[in-house]
Amino acid sequence: MMRKTILAFVVICLAFTALAAGCGSQARQYAQEARSSYITARAVLVGVAEFPAQMEALLRSGPIDSSREEAEELIDGVRDLLPSASSAFRTVSEKAELLKGEGSDKFTPYAERLLALVNMNEEIINGYIEFVGISDSVLQGIPYGENPEVLMPVLNSMDAVILRIQDLSSRLEQMEAETEALYLDITQ
Image 1 (cartoon, one colour):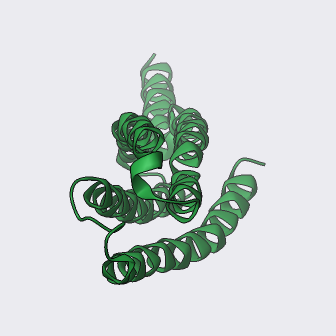
Image 2: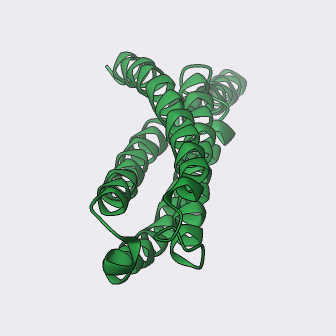
């Protein structure tokens, strides 16, 4: 009888040890959810990424006054997308934090990479916010039609913001490729 009790105790201890080691972990599910959320967030950001080229085409197409209405519609449209993009990346961050909270040696590096990607995407979103602000200021009052030379510093400022966004996007692509490779490796 004592042997059976000891054996039952050992089996129970082993079961708890297995659970503590991760057999009951939801890390794989959290990783899948975080990856899916990231893909969705990036898709939202694609709509925002089209804005600078569209705005530049409008500014170069002729007098600003004749393009004002179309430009304002573009600005309003991207302003509607920016909070959605930010919200989508907050969701990714929350899911990555859940994954990280699992304490899995295997999945925690993936969670940390996702969080780094979220931070970089937030920098990109901030760049777009800055670009939208500059674009809006172009429409709000400076009489560029009277003195086109006044427009050049603003266009140079817009170019600087776009170059910063492009640099971040290039680094982001590299990080995304590495993160996806890690995901594929840990989920096999």
